[in-house]
Amino acid sequence: MIGIRRAARLDARDLTDLLNAIIRNGGATALTRELDRDAMLGWIDRTPERSA
Image (cartoon, rainbow, N blue to C red; front, side, top):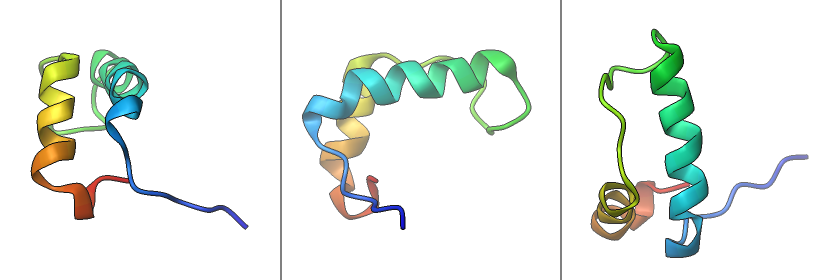
């Protein structure tokens, strides 16, 4: 069984690195420009209930 927890501020760097790798690969996300850690922190802070 796989457990999923809410993302925390300490996860921001790893999440940013992962998402940016997907963006660079292309086609798997609607995003076309890479994010920085501050943008990821903004997402986590604004919508913690949707951050996993």
